[in-house]
Length: 99
Image 1 (cartoon, rainbow, N blue to C red):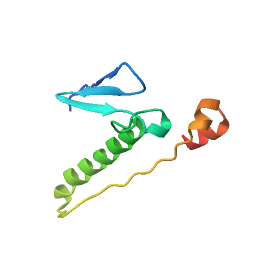
Image 2: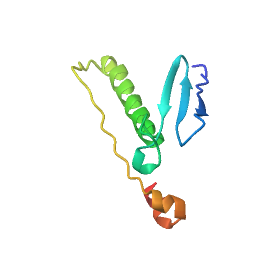
Image 3: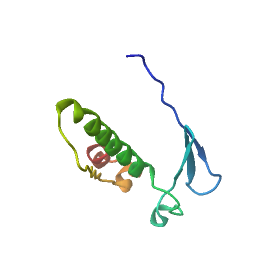
Image 4: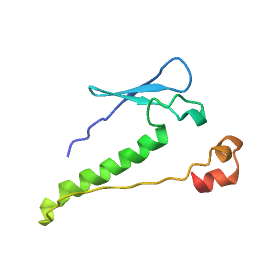
């Protein structure tokens, strides 16, 4: 199978922490909740990472199910992460364990 290069361009919106990701013909707004210094106009980067992983899992399930003669009627992935921003900014050992 040939290698495929997948890319995205992310540009800061010019104020606060908001950015816009350009992915093929799509645009995704990336921001933080108000409590974390954003304007809550989009999902935060960690939420998007988890959504991407969940999307990959769903694509794999729906792609391989027919190959194994498994009929699917629905599917859902729920991913959760632990975010410890204080440890990240302070560089404590807790960060390495939780992140």
